[in-house]
Amino acid sequence: MDKRNLRVLLTPIVLALAIVLGMFVDRLLPHRTSTSMGGNMYMPVSGSKVDVILNMIQNSYVDTVDVRELEETAIPLLLQSLDPHTVYIPAKDMQRANEGIVGNFGGIGVQFYKYLDTVTVVKVVPGGPSERAGIKDGDRILRVNDSLIAGKDMDLDKIMGMMRGEIGTQVDLTVKRRGTPGLLQIKVERGSIPVKSVDVAYMVNDTTGYVKVGTFGMQTYLEFMQALVKLEQAGMKKLLIDLRDNEGGVLQIAIQMINEFLDENSLILYTQGQAVRRKDYVSNGKGRFKDLPVHVLINEFSASASEIFAGAIQDNDRGLIVGRRSFGKGLVQDQRMLADGSAIRLTVARYYTPSGRSIQKPYDKGKVDYYNDIYNRLLHGEFSQKDSIVFDENLKYTTVGGRTVYGGGGIMPDVFVPADTVGSSRYLAEVSRTAYLYDYTFDFMDRHRGEMQGIKDYKALQEYLKKFDLVNEMANYAARRGLKRNEWGIRESRDIMRNRIEAYIARHLLDDEGFYPILGQMDTTLQEAVKQ
Image (cartoon, rainbow, N blue to C red; front, side, top):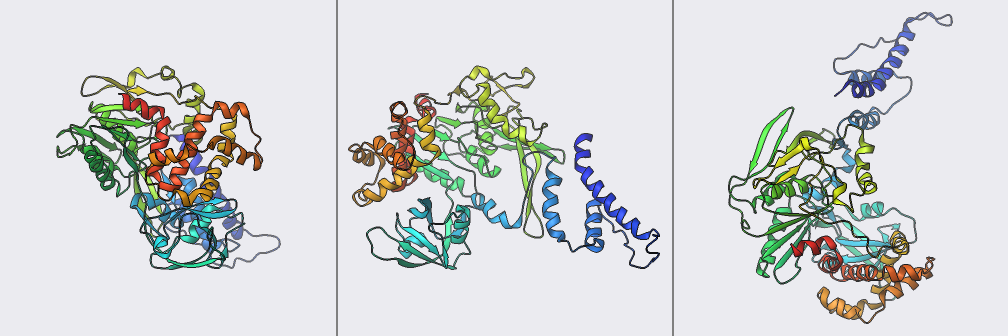
């Protein structure tokens, strides 16, 4: 830590100490209005300055102070001059913070959306508590226990918190069902709800399998292998692994997954830090898919474990990386639990790809600049032009096969695919921003749910939807909600809007197994990867 950062960190502490000591000294000095020398003198305690100051406040401050609240406020300030990924997690947030890693939570098993001020069930988790209790897709939830949630400007996180809880406990729901008179009173016993980390796996064509990994949690390796076996049985000869928008997760899980594609004794990565000796992670040669052609899809929001995965495949010349430069997070966090159930995710090391690259982008200008880097890339033209990226010749590395790669901030793909702006318009941005496009699909489902119940795959759904002028209907729906039709924008963005409407309807009906295959039909990065 340099002197400037140290000064920023210690200044508020020293000022607070000076104030407290000044108050203490003031009590000992004679005053014209009082010459009493009575009272309890405070004896300093051992420990850091922070411990001493908190002890002083607790024992000597003029008013009653919640020292625990002071600690909760002070800890994030103490960490803010460190790297952007060292964070404090209060005890009340630990369960939510760990859900993606652990792979489950206690809840009722529904996906819901707040449509026209009413919580609407999008999908009931198959085999989950709500399905067993009789909740159906499209149901409106009006009350949770004694709390009215319909027609109120209530935060979705608060509603979700009301439905979640300890496994085995009961929640009482008041439900309105389309076509059913009156209200339904349904009791649901909370159960263990899985958090899916592999979003979807399907065959893009007769020989190309596609799997999208949303995060790296404790169950991801198992889900990933099950997906690959399913694709293998369907005739997969080439695999596309989509890590776009995947922000990372558990390092060991990513290593297990990479191991499936590498020959024995191939370096996957190594980690090293000031207090951590270099540790190499090497493949064991027991992977099931060592000979399967692999392409990995990344973008500017692929981070951490996603970059470990892409870097290992690239540096070992095991497959092609397709998309745009990744985020640039090359730091390893260790979660350290505290006595009250809170935790600190402390950066303990850097990771390096097999060629020796550290892909961590600079963070010496502070967290605001660090996270604005993505926006600056956009302004600089990086999302549209590969040549806009200027590499540092001092950070040049070589893959196993002799190809040149660069460190210094993210994984640069082998095949660059610019962000697709074809068909963009202000009208498309408006119907997306206002959520009218998505809301329209709810309205459509309400009107056609019964006749679509027999549809079991996305191809059959798209065939059914051919008879509807979905874009024109959506534009009329948005106009009734207050967004004026824009005929030029509707023509310009018709194909994109049609694709998104079909994909959202497919998600309502078939979940991600319908959503992603339809969305992928206009996904330029995916289609480019198929060609390679």
